[in-house]
Every structure is written in structure tokens, then in C-alpha cells.
Length: 198
View 1: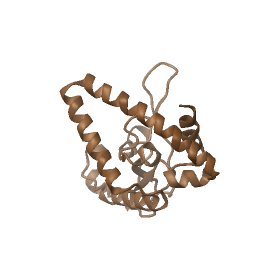
View 2: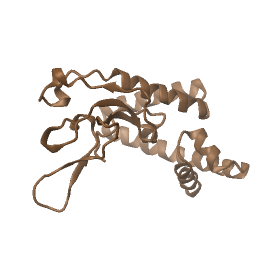
View 3: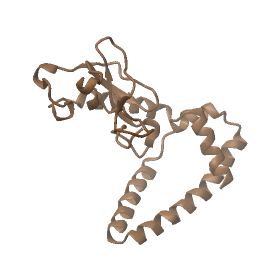
View 4: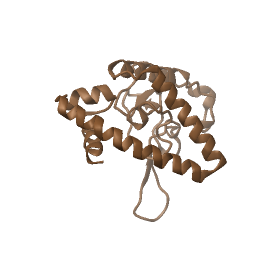
């Protein structure tokens, strides 16, 4: 999947709950990726970016837009595309209102957030401040930014190991860990194993 396939992301959940505009065809089905013929060669490029479903060059034509999340969730609300003003133009250049799907994905994140373990407000504020400070330092000197990140990685590795071992010792099921972190059981297990090996 290309870099821009998932258009929205939060620091809190990262790629686990990245969001994008999903499409449905006129028959109500969700189409597969759009394939692009880039000439000779074994590679076939494919994308799922909503604006490629414009019916041009034998591509499927989107009838409806909706929110989509990397976790597999799809928004219940559907936003019909009015092709009359779009005509034969390119979909990404049309004046299409995307506020509805974005709001639906944001609401989905709120639901996910309610099931996860809450971070103290002070810690959340500290993360925001730290990110801003490191970004400012990086803007002034990329080497200072890299050193700050390296120090941060060592700290998170050490603290992460202690946290992972405490979770293991508590006997908390992987499913419960996944819910607390807002991820899948397999990803949660991967996080536990990664930090326990640090």
C-alpha cells in the first residue's frame, strides 16, 4: 500500500487506526485496489485512494464515499457522489465535501479510545510538549534531533521492558492488552515480545 493510502493518522494510535475515504460502487460493493499499467516489467502498481475510482481508463466508478479505518471498520453513513457537476473531470480535482467521512472516522476513534487504557492528562500534555521541543531542535540542528530520538528510544526500551514484564507477571490475557492499547491481539503480542527482548 502506498504512502498516501491512509490519509489520516493520530500519534495516539498510529497506523493501527489510520483513516481514509472509502468508496462503494453503484451495486453496493467495496472495490478492490485500482491497478495501473506502468509499461513493461513484472511489477503491477495498485492503489486504493478514493480519487482513483473515477471511471476513467476502465477504472471502477465510485458511487458513494464513506469513512474507512485500517482496523477494518467501515463507516455506516454513506455520502453519495454527485457526478453531474464532476462530469468527465478528475475526481481529485472536483469540489467534493469530505467532512462527513472525516467526522465519522473521528467518532470511530472516540469509541476506540473509550475501550483503551486512559493516559493521564499530564502525560499526554508532556508528550505534546516533548514532540514540539524535539521538532524545534531538529529544525535548528538535525543531529541534535537524532540524538534526542536516540536517547528517547533507549528510555522507552528500558521502561517498556519493565512494563512488558509487569504485564506478563500479572497474567493479563493478550486480548485484554490489545483492547487496552487499541490494537489487535497479534500486534499486542508483538509489542510485549519486542519490549521483553529489549
